[in-house]
Structure formats: structure tokens, C-alpha cells
Image 1 (tube, one colour):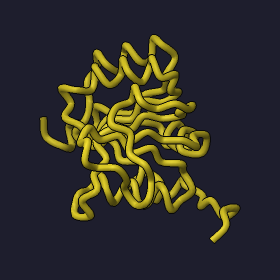
Image 2 (cartoon, one colour):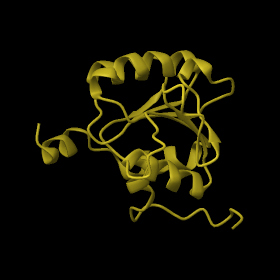
Image 3 (spheres, one colour):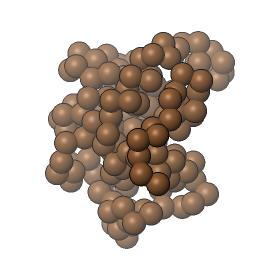
Length: 154
């Protein structure tokens, strides 16, 4: 499906997105990469520098940390509350990750650009999660509706 068609299909009210980004504090990023050339690394960096507690998730047993942040090798390893599960994996994995996000007690399931699955969204929404698909939180942070988090220390 062309990108513009997806944007129209997964069009979210700016207030809905802003409310999510203002309310979440802890983000588990499934598909986080330690490779500085990967988009997921840049998104993790910006979200972390913006003040979110990032929990990188990557199954590679040799990857122990990203930007000094300990890596979890699966969502099952996370031992603390998570507000949002952000997905940087193929859309075919979104349903399985939605199941894991529900089990983890996340409040939000967020599919990165190109990550969407209506069945996964329905499953998550029926379990009480807010869902965003085919969007990037890094991009959404800088849209006109966003107010910077000026309360954070430098």
C-alpha cells in the first residue's frame, strides 16, 4: 500500500498522539539497534534525550547495552512496569508483540512507520491499550502540537 494511503488509513487526532507522548514515561523498544546508522538507534537516542526511560529489546545475546542502557533480549525479561511498547519489527510480528505487550501490562502499543496490523490493533484495544500504527514518536514529538518538556534538567 502506498505511504500516502497508509497515512490516510492510520490518521490519528493530534491530541490523541500528544496525550500519549505526554503520559508515557517508560518505553520498551522492540527491535532497538546498537548500530548508529539504523533508524531505531536514532529514535531511541532522541526519545532517551527527551527524558523517556528507554528499555531496548533485541534478541541478539551479544548485544548487552545501547547508549549505556542495558538491553533486554525479549519483552518477557522486562521486570518493571512499561507504559508503551514501540515496535521496530516487521508488521508480520506485530500481532505476537501485541500479545506480549498485553501480558506485560503496557498502556500503549505503538507501531513504527510501516508497522501495522488491524487484528493486532483490535486485540490490544480490546485489552485496554491505546494503539498507534505507522507513525514515529520521534517525528510526532516535533509536530506543531507538541510542547517541549522544558522541566527536564540539561
